Amino acid sequence: MNKINSICVYSASSTKIDSVYFQAAECLGHLLAEKKVRLINGAGSLGLMSTVADAVLSKGGEVTGVIPEFMIDQGWHHTGLTELIRVKNMHERKQTMATLSDGVIALPGGCGTLEELLEIITWKQLGLYLKPIVILNVNGFYDPLLEMLDRAIDEKFMRPQHAEIWNIATTPEEALKTVFELPLWDVSVRKFAEI
View 1 (cartoon, rainbow, N blue to C red):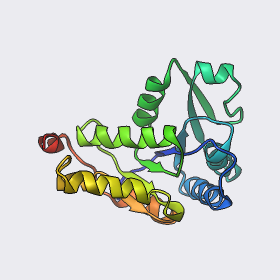
View 2 (cartoon, rainbow, N blue to C red; view 1 turned 60 degrees about the vertical axis):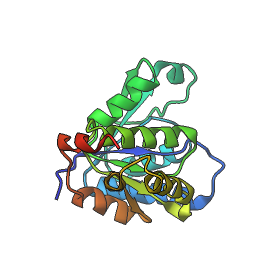
View 3 (cartoon, rainbow, N blue to C red; view 1 turned 30 degrees about the horizontal axis):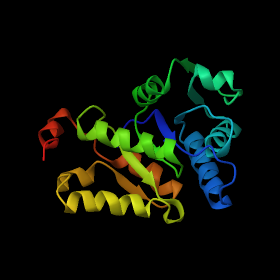
View 4 (cartoon, helix red, strand yellow; view 1 turned 120 degrees about the vertical axis):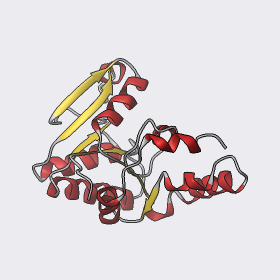
C-alpha cells in the first residue's frame, strides 16, 4: 500500500453539468476526508472543483487550493479552504499541484481538466512524475479519450507499456483504492520514452 497523504484532483468548474458528476465529486470528497487524505486542487469556487472541496471540508478534512493571481483578481477562488497557495501563472499552478500530491485522480472536465490530465500523463511517461494517475470515468465521460490513447498505442505513437501510465476507475471508491494500491514508478521508465 502506498503512503498517501494528499491527492490532486483535476475537475470541471462548470455549474451546468449533469448531477451524476456532482454526486461523484461529493462522494470522492467524503472518502478523502474519511481516509485523512488532503485534497489538492485548483481552488475554484464553482463546479466540481468547489463540490469536491466542500465535501472534504464538511467531513473535517483538509484542502489545499492552488490558484494564479489573475483568477483571484477575478474572484474565482474558493475562500473557505484550509490553505490557499497563490501562484504567478497556470504553469506554476500545475507544477505546485503535482509537487504537493502523492497521486492524481481526474474527474470529468473541459479543456483545462483534459490539459492537466494529459500533461501529468506526459510527465509520467518522461519519468518526471512517478505517482499513481487514475482517470475516474464517471458515466463513460472519458471513453473517447481512452479510445484515442488506445489508438495512439495501436498506431505506434506510444509504446504498449505507456498504457500502464494511467488506470481507469468508474466509481470514487475504486479510484481511491487504486491510488493506494498502484505501485510507484521509478525513473527507469525513461527508457520507454522513445518509441
